Amino acid sequence: MTENVRPIPVDSWWHNAAASPAMWAYAAIALLCIVFLCVGLRVIAALARTRARTHAGLIHDHDGTATIEFTLVLPILLFTVLLLAQTTMVMVGNIYVHYAAFAATRSAIVMIPADFEGEPENSIVNAPDNPKFERIRRAAAFALTPVSGRMTQGVAAADDLVPAFTAHYDSYKTTAPAWVASRLADQYRYADAATDISVMRTIFSLSQPDTVSFAALPEGAAYVFGPKEPVTVRVTHKLYLAIPYIGALFADGRLEDAESPTTTLSGSGEGARYSLVSSQYTLVNEGVSPELLPPPQLPRIP
Image (cartoon, rainbow, N blue to C red):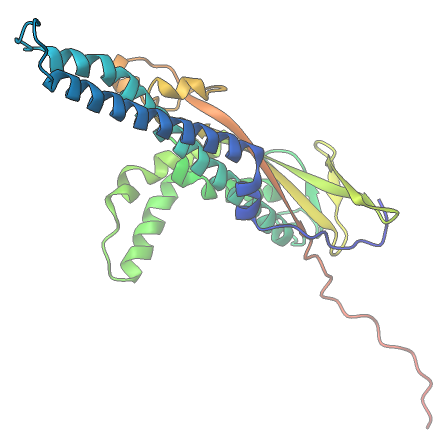
């Protein structure tokens, strides 16, 4: 890595989310679902027209025909609608993960320069349970709370969100929405348990300006970032799949202790299915020393 660090231009998080290959794949699935839905509606309309026709020599009693047509087409339409809903939710979740990467990196470039709970300025240990690392990770988890599932057991800090949000709404003389008391703490517990980060350094060379690579910091060892040195944070999130049964098509595994959407339907105690989504963002470190340079020693003329 060269000593002369220059900033790396990066696009906004929403631009990166829209341009990601996963987003195009989800968009293709959504388009396919819409096509199947339109075809299904056309089939129902065609069957209805066929039923209305009268043909000589045929039995005119058509009682029950509409029920049979509806029974044949309904499973296909229901599957298509649920698949479209789950695909849309995964696309939205992908955008949130990109935003969480921006939020975590923004937290990193503010926390790393600070002298925080025993960790010196511009230094960070890339490992869980370290003060700066946990602050950065929680910034990502908080950004992902709106698209998270529910978990009744987890970090105690989640319980502090409810009075904090209630006080926020009280300050504006409005009543806190019902979801603050019923869902906020459980969703943050899920986001906290399902979100991992990795703080990375950016490697480039002035002789090859188009070649940029990223390397994770040494595990468990302190690393010192220079002033204005690029800081990259990678966020990996286990995105909650809320649609019952259809979510299995996108699933990469199950998260234990998280409520599954089929828990109340089947009585199953299995964890919630998730899809693994990752994103990273790069910003420059804000660690500029506040100390002024010593004054020059100039000879004084009496």
